[in-house]
Image (cartoon, rainbow, N blue to C red; front, side):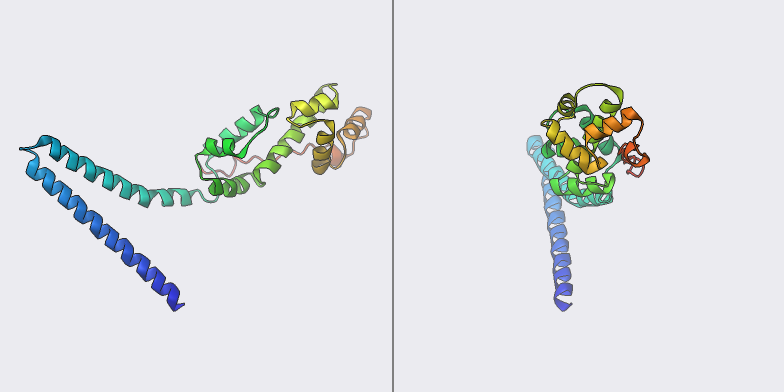
Length: 204
């Protein structure tokens, strides 16, 4: 307990010392700029630019952690909407983590935490589920062979579709289609695995 208090005290003292050093540096730069403003305009401008850069860097260190912590729970609405649009438009292609992270402007760790908090699932579980939903839609509205539907959903082949489909729906896509066509699809299996709207609880 005592060691933790000591660490907090040391950190506070270091922060105060940094603030004093920054203030002293800014004061010195502005004093020099004031003394040279009439005699050496270029030198005065250089001092002011340096002071501005130091102040901006200091403000960024203060503001950035607070801004990131404000949205630590969930993604903002625009971030979630951008991810949904990108995923839905790229079912037939590989969807990689770096591409998703780049769309949000977050760090990698922060992205994965907030994605799960927002969508209720890890990114690639959500993507797999959206692909199954898309496959269900194709099965219901077309007579396309399952091998073609698999490729259209970004899956390797029909066997890949079968494995993923069974995980989310509890049966194979072929059986699901036959039950639907024959009208014997049970209430449980007839439900498409649509997700709840992740935008409803997003930050504005």
